[in-house]
Image (cartoon, rainbow, N blue to C red; front, side):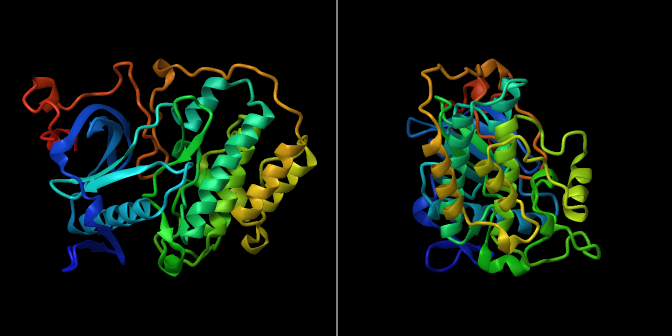
Length: 352
């Protein structure tokens, strides 16, 4: 709803009117991503290349209220935090449908980048450099009291030169002061901290308290993936991986890694959240490790061509990709195809 002071309010979050944009200024292009509750299109806004995320409101009053709350929360958080390793927020509109507009990242998702590289692994300096980007983004979020809750390779995108990683999708993020009201089993099982679901008697949907250290656990699993370029808990389903981590305290192996990297991993995925480091400490540990490495050899980075960047199905609600696909795999809204609304956002219903 809209308050009397010019803010949209929901779940104690607000959207300042200065971030609301005129949908008629949006040019909608090919669809480039899709999640359980949203679709993402490549587009333009005031001659700027952008990603346009259109959120489905839901079919029942309960779904509508929940998704509107999540939308307001996401936009509020995006408008509050700015960092070179966080996707840049451009604006949003609430009518005729809910839309989030961000910068367009052309380098593809970290997940796709790693898949295209297999069976090879990243050079250690590159892997740790990517991890440092992620840790700095998370350090920024946590400094604003925001927990991401869905840190995984699908929600990490590369810039066009594929040298920088940016964190996207705050659709599941919450303020830490509200954690006592959070829903358990949020995120994606394979990367999810055990405390989110490790209580045997916890019923699905029950509220549970946890803190920002859930993101540190997820970071450890992503770091392991960066270092090995293999799926964590290989050979297990998502639920099997979750059960093994929570009830058997099983983790991916940290053997055959430099001692300093092994220490970072094991401390970050510690069963006790209070024993895990915070992201400021993690940043310092990664910087220390990088400083000890020999200078990199001048090798051209591997190219990931856009024709290979097919969108893979996300494993959790929300939109897990804002990358551009320019090989005809996306679809263009009907209004633009017919030319009637060229450049105008008349196609909400067709994109929705």
